[in-house]
Length: 375
Image (cartoon, rainbow, N blue to C red; front, side, top):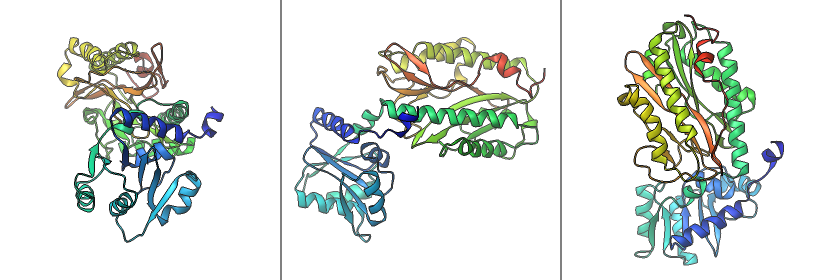
């Protein structure tokens, strides 16, 4: 683990893979405007910078604020520093005109309409073309260095969760719990929270993306917590339900149904299986239990540099899973007025099947027998 932590990604190899992808798309070059894609291809972690890539030349367009940082993070990369008074899209257009690289393909998902209009205005007619998904496709499959960072992010999140649960009491608010989790991640060595922590007590657990408020743990018998950690730019994403009071038969039924759905879906994960099929397996379990209309979101998603990347386990996603994809499996049932249950783990697709990367207990007996539970 330590050696993987110290290893540096082969950014040149990543760019070579991108060139192959571009050739398949009959694209000669690409202006990368997504900051996560810039980081993935270069190692640069700053902001407000674009990357131009082609087989003839590759250069980073940035400004003087990042001159020294770029020298440290990607010293071999050609750097074009724009004046602080020149918008970055104008600097890009100027560079394109001088180097006569046209047509220029531009990432459409992260280039604003205003930037696109300015680029078209400054470039010759038909010199700019939109492109999408080339770098994101490469990011779908994690290499050993990325996987090691994700696993550390999972470990930091899990350790913080265990420590936070040990301190729970009925007078704590949802916000108290979220704050403690996020502080705990940093105490464990993580860079911080992967996203805004979700904490929902009782009825508020029926809000899949509910934000922490002043409701206290003692106001209901359970709490749903969705959290994650960040480590070396990579993220983790987990959800658990914690019993904080009286255990009811209704909660037990819902919990057991969600867990059965999750375990069935995870068991089916392997290369070649359609993403929609994994979603359907979990959805079938929940449908049989009578809660089909209360499972209101897709089963899971990929993550890495971003918490939601391009892969989705959901209806209509008729793409096969591939080795080295990392994704969540998180079925849920949400009943307004009562609450919700979601169980989420992080899964790696392997050559022969899958590996569950997270390890927090989730079987009903472990949840039911938590320190604050009562019968």
